[in-house]
Image (cartoon, rainbow, N blue to C red; front, side):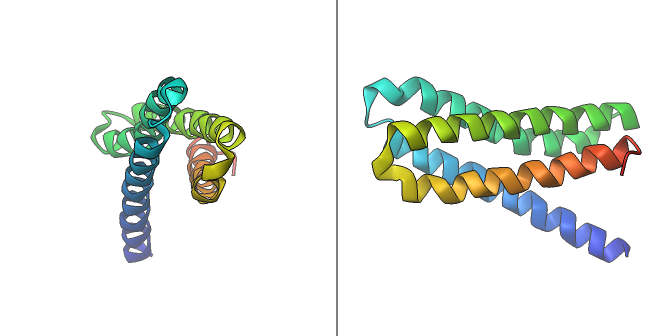
Length: 123
């Protein structure tokens, strides 16, 4: 059971890094339109915050501190979905690039949300 948990954590951490890198790459394309620079900046901040907070939780000083990092990560993943939806609506030509990232953001949110509920003892 412990090996499965370690493997899941390693795979999830890799997934968070890959997601952040894909968002950064997408924003390079989005920044070609001057009117979308602010959205690209916000998207990079929120998307990279997800992984940063999950990684930061490792150094938490208490279970409550650990939970707080995951709650911040959940909020950031939900914010990321908002910016991705805005981009889908404002750049239809990038829809095929954005849709898989939106799906990944939704899956990441569900995983983190389930973790938060478990930590709160509500699962």
